[in-house]
Amino acid sequence: MICQECGQRQATVHLTKIINNHKTELHLCEECARQREDFIQIPSFSVNDLLAGFMDLGHSQPAVEKPVSSQCAACGMNYNQFKKIGRLGCQQCYQYFGNELHPVLRRIQGNTQHAGKVPKRSGSGLLIKKQINQWKAELKRAVELEAFERAAELRDKIKELEQSQLKEGDRK
Image (cartoon, rainbow, N blue to C red; front, side, top):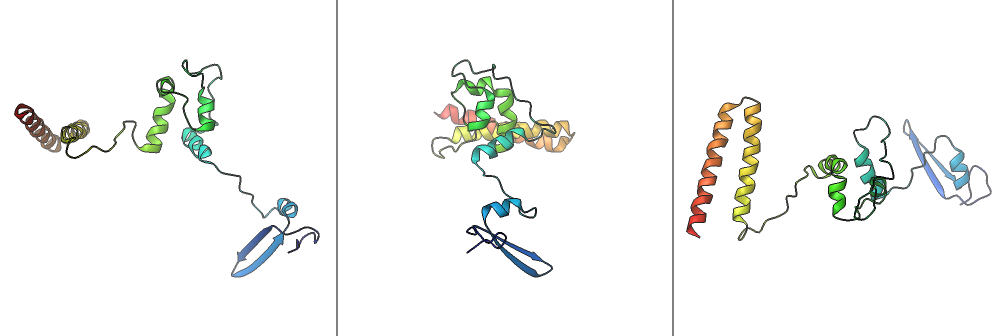
């Protein structure tokens, strides 16, 4: 199909507009499509761009990049390189870039603490500890909100679980 605008080149862009139930189709070459004001070109997209977007969320102004001289002592990677490739260079980078990574991880994963799966048979103790920690956090929130009835319920549940854990430890 030939471009409807210039009539010379092959049409590679096909634009369909529907305005007030009136459909208009245009078949354009790439050059003519670039020149049209009503044609929006979408830039290419990558997962690294998505991660970089998460890292810059919440900044009302353009993100201030760390100076290139601040690098991980172990691998030499800087934070700007991490933003571009979306991967850290080594395990020390987690400690070195911790201040920048915590908000990013919280936005992406919802938490900065790993909460992987625990085997049911061998991990019952871990599950109980996890439940106790969760209830302790809820207890703290309840006290801050002065919801003392809820706080008392949580306190009792925590004591009960801790005692059952101690009894189970004595049996082993």
